[in-house]
Image (cartoon, helix red, strand yellow):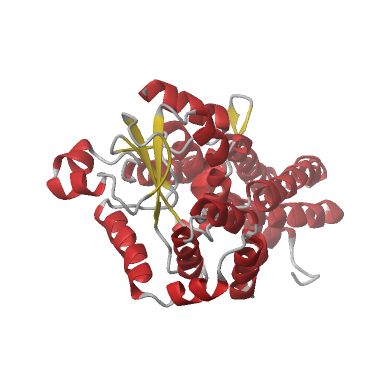
Length: 142
Length: 219
């Protein structure tokens, strides 16, 4: 992103990635609770990832954590658009950096433990990465 | 105030719309379970589940419980599920007949070649040995040089190299593999591996315990 990007533009990017991640994780959560297998091309093996023991943390599906995370990002973006108080940006990395770390761990698990690729998980990991990068940039601007 | 309502209202509406659409897409997926009418009631499907002389089997040939698996040698998910096979087939050697059929995906470069090596090894009585070694070494040969690695595996199994090469060129081997593949298509297989217990497609057990529970529930 160019260095002169305004906070407004960055928040719009944050909104876009949060919406993408939200849609993706709602789908995976719905698939989890309906007992379906996510539809994807057979080579990707996302059924394996979605059915693996790593797809839940105790009783909570990882996808549901994604829904909460992206919902929080959406609310934060709208909150800034509403009150225009940059103090919000100070808190964002406190959530987005651990979320990014968790995402990296999930991608590691996917590649090296389950050895199958899930396109929905990769989309979510990419969204989280962009959101984390944007949040750091916003914090610096605050 | 109007702007505030518009902002938050848009967010709520957008989240509800996206949520509803995604849930509907998830709900619209075809069930994993193949309906009974498809899996057991047509003569064509019934015939597919009959055990053939050239099937690769483990367990008890007279067992009442038959588990048929359609799988691919290069698919990572198939490797994951194949890792349970030895343990489960030895634990239930008396109660279950395990049948392994080919469903090589064309999207994988070496799937059909691997299947041909397995079938050719089978002609020398080493199908399961080749099957296991193909999966164990899948990450090595998937990246390239598969044929050399298959040949090395065959050598490590003391297969007659000349005979193996002759068999690999035998069209009957190719036909056998394609015939399994076509059966899989007839069954409407959407992904690999796909497991059928008594002719009914079941959800893949993702652990040894889940596999044991599945079998116990069907015995």
